[in-house]
Length: 118
Image (cartoon, rainbow, N blue to C red; front, top):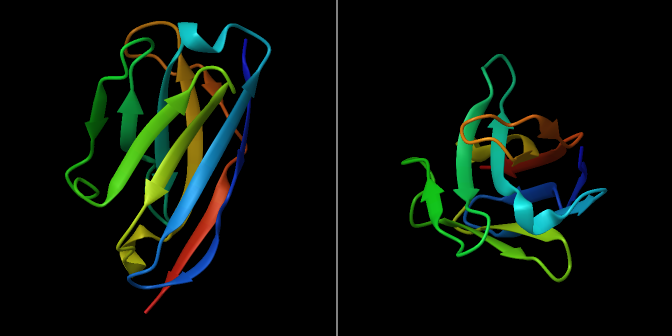
């Protein structure tokens, strides 16, 4: 198991930026693919972005492509989500997740709230 703690959420105006961080502990961070998901009120949790274990291949949801950037620092056991040009529809609780089995995220953080005002 790996423990995940997100930070960096908050309230921002539309068009603004935030950077989320997710600090990992407990196992070898570089063995895990990392991802961000989000869940808005009354909606199901949805995939936002993913970064692979070693060479850092990234994948994004269409809704955030070109605005969000996922990155990782294996020396700091941390994954980031840089969010630019934020929109009110980006408002959600953002969760960090880790995967050591392809397609399965079995480690989750507690979430951090992001609120974008119009």
